[in-house]
Length: 65
Image (tube, rainbow, N blue to C red; front, side, top):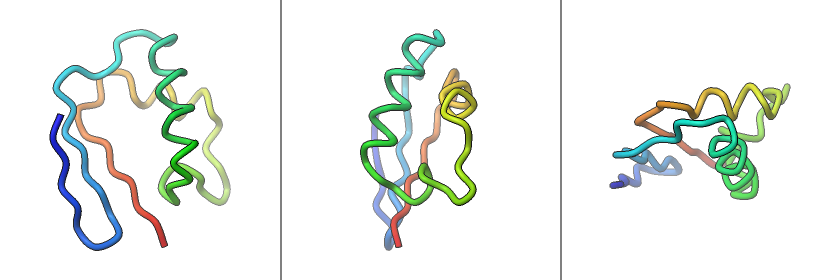
């Protein structure tokens, strides 16, 4: 895993993304706890949908205002 910080955004390259729903749900909770604006949206993305988007995803981006 490597990351790049650019302004108020962190881009993370993931070598081994989550493969199962269980793994993705756990990781989604960790992402929510960062309170990143890109995760806690208005309107919010349903938690299960956000977790599903992490399965097989090799790039994560987080930003804060």
